[in-house]
Image (tube, rainbow, N blue to C red):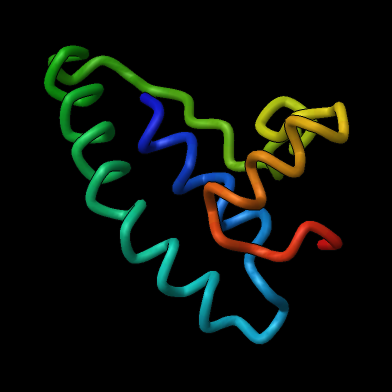
Amino acid sequence: EGERLDLFRRVILAADDGEERKKALAKLLPLQRQDFFEMLAVLEGRPLTVRLLDPPLHEFTPHDTGSIANLAENLQVPFDR
């Protein structure tokens, strides 16, 4: 889950130019496709509700300055974003 979380965080923290976000989404897409395949297979035709709302960003990013700086360093993004 660590890799997936880092990919999602990279999407959140991507620069506004769109290229960084597109690259991060391209890496995340195969994982999400597999998730949906597995969920639908387990449900065996029963209905599935998927939340398509904006994710609560505060749940995916750290809150204290040290952890934010560490995340920025690990994802190689500027600390000031």
